Amino acid sequence: MDETYTLLFKRLPYSVARESVERLNEAVLNGYLLIEWTTPERFEETKILRMKYQDKPRISFTDLTSIVVMNKLKIVNILTEDAHFIQVGMGFIVVP
Image 1: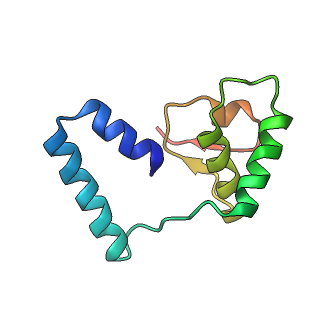
Image 2: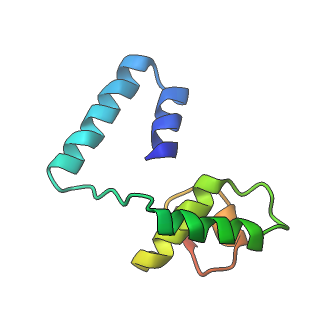
């Protein structure tokens, strides 16, 4: 949600971005969208990944956190324009 909110407010007029956020919140409340929270354990795992991928300094901590959560939930398909998920070689498949 971190990067979704950032992108909405970066690319859209404020009123449209705000409406989009409200719709996302409704989707969560109605059970159409599940939010997985960053726990202290996941944060620690993300720090370990950050150190592991020292040769990839451009991968954001947010992306590494997503990778940790995706691994825990066994998610392999990802909708992104970000090549970092492929660069880590963990079996992610970018959905066009």
